[in-house]
Image (cartoon, rainbow over all chains, first blue to last red; front, side):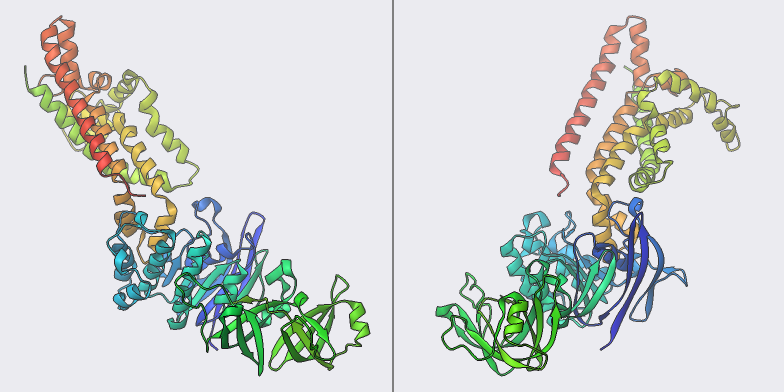
Length: 372
Length: 221
């Protein structure tokens, strides 16, 4: 896969930013980390916005930088190249939408379109984001969710080579967020450009991320596909402990029971269905591919499949690795076909069951899981 | 009633306001965006006429504008006339005297537009000038309205500076406020009334129109 290289080294007072990472040149890469981890600083450097909203006072001092996009060098300290933001084909969707208040929605979305000599199909995007009826409105007449939709259309119509989305849902309420997510997913399926998406919400990550770059204290500490990172980086779901992801296809909807059935590595798993939306449209349908996030603490292991249990899911697994946790518990990495599953169990159970690498046994877990 | 003082006053105010818009806009823009350490010095200099007695300002201007003064000497390179007791001198004095009334409202409105919207415009391919023209200017229309009104009205009402550097030459530098003063000095209250009432009505109308327009063209934020 073609990768986009990002290298920045900068500081401001005590804060040091040191990022050397690569993201796929297509799909959504999520920049994940706590606030203060340097996500926004990195985005501003990439976009050429110089580190801060409050003027030159907080400007990051860049020591080294190297960043190119589609054969154009954007930043290179050795060649003294540092393009101005308007010279970069990078569109930005801000958390606070930043629509121009004196322009109508139509004028807003044409601002970048005209300046970048874009030839994209305006009508198609207007339709896709359902803003046809809003074109003559002014931003202050729109709801938070509508504003953010307009802001996305405005960014996309400028025909960027890279789209930056800085927590575009953070300022919205729960319902608006749920309504907006499908739009972002739809961008994701059509765009052939990389999207750099900043978030610290694991639910958003689960739903949108193809690739993750983990940031901590101004550094990128890990990067990779979501499923891999969940296993190796408990940071993603710190409060709940280690987690993992199972992927599969929806094979049946058990609406009355509030469950859905998912085909995963040849096994039928039962998962709690996400609540149906008010318009009676099921959020998932048969055939959809699905990602579910499960916590290692919710998985238990047994030597034979239990028959009379309230636990719905029992699958055969093979132990691949046993890791001693700081808490005295054991974290077991188990293979389920091509996918991996984690279980945390006590030292005592580990001894009683005589668990060792290579052993075949059964993993069971309840239907509760976080769903894409 | 003579019309010359009225015409001179209006002409002075109009030219002064125009010059101040041309000079004051870039200055206010720089003040609103800069973090330069000399910024406070410039800000203080611009605000000086707000606190200085007009006679003090007028006195120094008289010295600077005289053929031996630094402005006057510079002027004599281009012109045979002197600046003191001339209409041109009056314009220079008024520009300095009314400067804060134009620069401060502009600076405040530029600051209100803020950096975030500019950044959004940049990221959509607009250069700094383009951003200023299409984002900052329209969103500062209210600031411009206030700046023009205050700059104009303040120039119309000036007295001390004019008296110091312009003297009282009929049909050249004699403005309304001075004519009124002259009439009062010789106890011609009737004539003073005519000008004074006219000025009062005019000022009130200008402010009335400005404030009502201001409501109509409220910046949408």
